[in-house]
Amino acid sequence: MPHTHHASASYSHETSATTATIWGFFTDVAGWKEWNAGVYSCVLEGLFIKGTWMTMVLPDQEVIKSQLVEVTEPTGFTDETTLGDITVRVRHEVSLLPAGNCSITYTIDVNGIGAQAVCDQVSSDFPDVLRALAERAERQVSQ
Image (cartoon, rainbow, N blue to C red; front, side, top):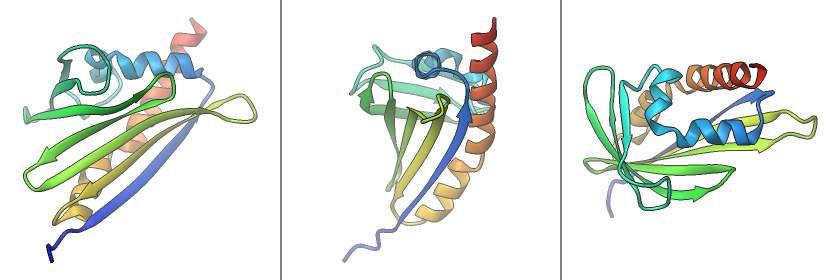
């Protein structure tokens, strides 16, 4: 029996920005660096559709290749990254709340040996990223 481990976490942030506005920020992959301090640059290698690959460069210049494995316009997408024997999936979702605001949620799912450590490391900045995304989206709406 393989020694496979699993870890997951979910983070949410409420915003007054619309789902369409948040979706626009999701699909502007080259612009992620403007609101995500963990991204130096990101290039989408095609259209924002299932199966498309993207190359992300982190601030320390580490290069990560990820694939869009699910795209559901305008509510969210999931990307998948393989790091050796570990698979990291992150679901980026926006949903309308009953009071009219939206919730932006990032859910990470990690499989492989050392999954919890990878999950903790990758998602450590998710609260800050969500807050920065919401703030930027709200500023755009108010302009």
